[in-house]
Image 1 (cartoon, rainbow, N blue to C red):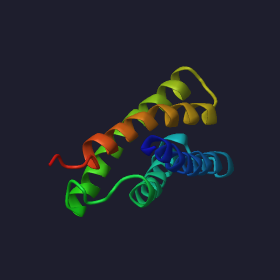
Image 2 (cartoon, rainbow, N blue to C red; image 1 turned 30 degrees about the vertical axis):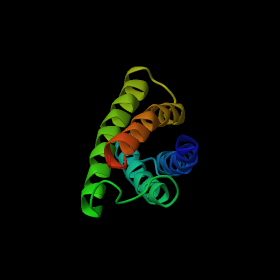
Image 3 (cartoon, rainbow, N blue to C red; image 1 turned 180 degrees about the horizontal axis):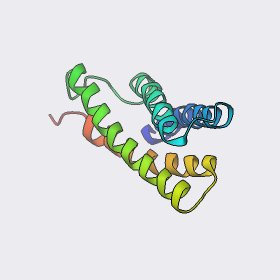
Image 4 (cartoon, rainbow, N blue to C red; image 1 turned 90 degrees about the horizontal axis):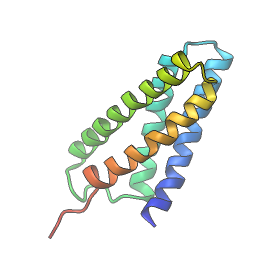
Length: 126
């Protein structure tokens, strides 16, 4: 059930990420690299708030400030992977920007779920 809820939360965050990325690259002609970083960070904030509201129990393992720090560490790793995938797909394989972003988002989803469910929000053992 938790994975299904995270799929929905992740889907909302992905729509925000891909939507902002699409808008900013098409309408403003900004380069994909900084745009992807910005849209990813905004989507990560949305994902965090939706996740602690609907998927994970905040504060179950760590104090709030440690929890937020760990979420940012997991997300930083995800951002690095996201940017690497985009670089390979866009710059080396000359893939369409939006298809590359959708692919990168789909791959990074699994790391984000694993990282949050096992490293950040996993309940303490009694």
